Length: 426
Image (cartoon, rainbow, N blue to C red; front, side, top):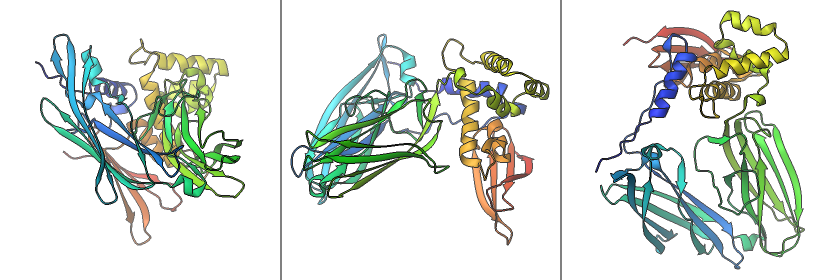
């Protein structure tokens, strides 16, 4: 049997291409190949209202990642076998339930074992009294006996006692209405979602008295504090639990960080608020969705001076033709609908806009934004204060590029200016 070694080959190739086309002087942020013993197991611990009085529905949802699992080649297939255990404890640390099973994962192609996409297992459900609980989840490689685990505690709300309520919130792929826990988006720092596919915010509302309830919600950009979506809906429940979802397409909101807030009330003014933060990054974004004039202006750091000046004299149609041909010629994998190089560059632009803007200046136009667009995320970022005036200072280090940049906010208004650029001594 040959152990299927995991390497992030695609990521390495992509970053190398970014060095070639985007980063001057062959500069690029350091590549992180693989962490030692990465944990392939992630867990959702969710609470929902129940139709049964004085109870709640708890769900333990396991997700595993193929690229962090150990596959063995058997014949023409790649196989991984893991034992799973989920234990549920109450507030006294007493085991109130336990599930155990074994699962075999069979893949037909070695490339599938490198897939970073998360895979969900069948949800494990518990009917509980409201209160404090803790789960312990473990997966064991039956061949190597290597064990991975997760644990988390949670207080489940007494929905029946409060009269109205809002469940935990989850995100799912697609904008169409669907059953709860269907096509759930895996936990991650950034939700990378296909532009055309979109996603939905899903939750359950609760009414113990089956009287009309009003649900008011909004979606706020956490960087600008601006409300980008909002609505208020009155519902007449026919049962105590009500599925509710909000579909969001790529054309609805730009990439960025958001906060979903919802509030439910009935005639007695009893309310419960839910808050859920997330960051979304749109992938497979079509060229037609870009504003050529703005996008070409944002490409000032990668266009030659001659190219950039020439775009200033173009009419709109010429700008779009130039934009499309420029990125088409640099598509690292032309046979796919995704242009990885273009996405990476404008991801950097979006990130700079979100985190480096100040007053009325767009983040990509700032000194930090310029360096981020060219070099990407620094390998190391150090923050401090300078002299007795305590002027904020940031030092960004790029090990592979052998560069270090120092930014100082001398006016203390978020305007970090590049004060120093040095080569890193070996």
